[in-house]
Length: 92
Image 1 (tube, rainbow, N blue to C red):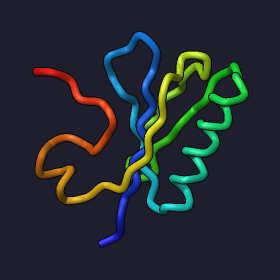
Image 2 (cartoon, rainbow, N blue to C red; image 1 turned 90 degrees about the vertical axis):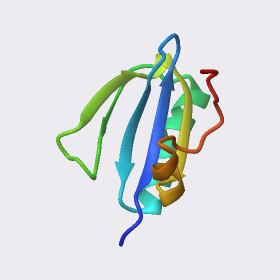
Image 3 (cartoon, helix red, strand yellow; image 1 turned 120 degrees about the vertical axis):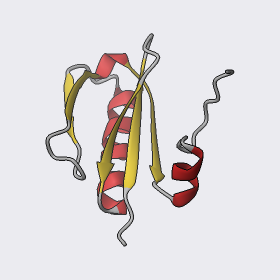
């Protein structure tokens, strides 16, 4: 079974996280670093993302609205809890 890597993008003033999947660690790290470098440089414009696992899943975001990016490997523990690993915890 091959591993899947998830890249989550959080937007300013938006309660949802946008996610796309990559089939390889290298592809995931490349996308993560691209978004991170655009955030550091203050790049404006639109970033279009497509999901490798579901090619019909696409999203376009304004780089000026990106507040955070996260990359992680999809694992059985994340699936069993229903929540991906991350840095944010919301009170229920």
